[in-house]
Amino acid sequence: MRLVIATCSVTYAGRLNAHLAQATRLLMVKADGAVLVHSDGGSYKPLNWMSPPATLRVTEPDAEEAEAGIVEIWTVKADKSDDTLRISLSEIHHDSSHELGADPGLVKDGVESDLQRLLSEQIDRLGDGHSLIRREYPTPIGPVDILAKGPGGTIAVELKRRGDIDGVEQLTRYLDLLNRDPLLAPVEGVFAAQQIRPQARTLAEDRGIRCVVLDYDEMRGVDDAESRLF
Image 1 (tube, rainbow, N blue to C red):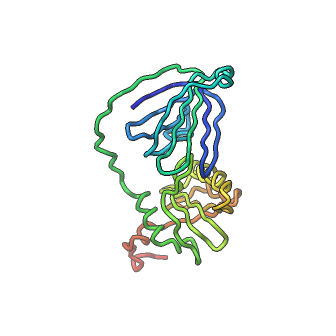
Image 2 (cartoon, rainbow, N blue to C red):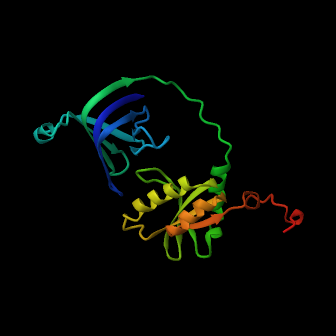
Image 3 (cartoon, one colour):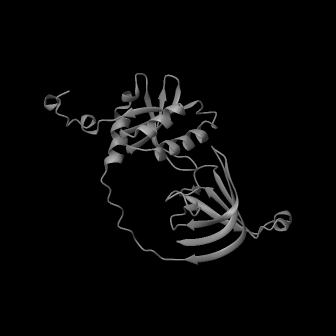
């Protein structure tokens, strides 16, 4: 893995377009070809990235770019599409490479991933006339859990075990990007979780996002209806 801390600006061009103004950021180049752009905040999520397979090409700036203070250009192109990530570096503060070796992988409890799988198989829980487009629909800022087709257009679903305000904010960012794509717009949001906090529900409904509470046990067929009091 290569780690570069640099003052840079970033432009993503493809199905969706996005731009990051000049700032100091962490650039990660992974052995599988992925390139990720991180800020010193926002938890684990990159601001932008290019997923593998992709090819990184490093070039010198032209005369106009050099006069503007740019010292290096990174062009990352997806191997299977026309998507391009262009990083203009004005100053490199740190540059190092590290051999991490093989990783055994993360063991998850599977609840959120199971919710995603079950809802994709039971997409009619969102209402009549819904159909699945795909799970983990990619965007420049992260994958949307489920993208579906509803009677009124495209539906973007964000899934959480416990729905909080952060999840609503995350879905809002996805909706902003997806609604810029004329092939998908208009895109409506659905915030789905086993539990949704009142503050999150209020914020979601204020932004026109529909909330859906999911019963995990009932969805996987282990709910004992006879033992319920209500």
